[in-house]
Picture 1: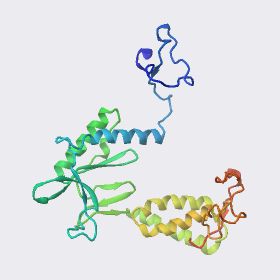
Picture 2: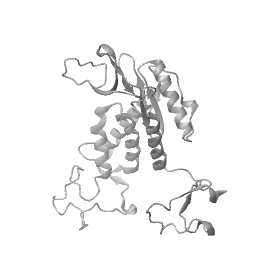
Picture 3: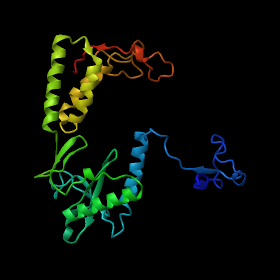
Picture 4: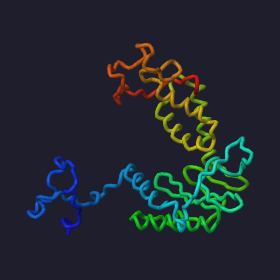
Length: 284
């Protein structure tokens, strides 16, 4: 049945020279049939395929915003910027809203995704439930598997998501769990010890591990970004085209510091030449 479950792309002006003839049956030689097939046994989808499919599914879930029966419908974009006479700090700066009588602002239901994870929102408990129901039902209809273990009731403390703890009590906050915060502090003590003992010979692999975990913390603790930049420049400060502080030089800088590649593109460093130890930069 496999040869009968494809689509004929013959009427379209496409280049099939690289595909060959997928099906060699005599009645199909004058057609360009392409059939769907599953991945090989043991193979998994790439992150690119998963994210791209989820973005497509998100568009289908949102549907037509002008449809009165669509829970994700909205009528206008509400601006709530600091300095306006009617500025409300409890509302986001820019949001989708529904037109209500008496100039009442009601935020429309929305959907947020992180890789392949969905989080619907709503202005009321019922609307949030309807948004979650539509999200799950449409994604299942599209053939994507739902994970009921991740589903929770509507609440102001929904728990961890996208590497942060969300709280909506007296305001909206993104927090880090106690375990991650303790781990972060221990890594900062470890990093400080390495800088005190041997600032000119830091283990590059360990710095990459600390930087990877620090990415989780800076999402909720923005003042840590300068420390993250210090790790970036320390880890890659040995590359060609960097100044003494680790900053990347522009193409017009001294020729002694830039890549010898005449095309002006970044140099390709052979993995075997990557140093095991790097020197700290002032930012770190």
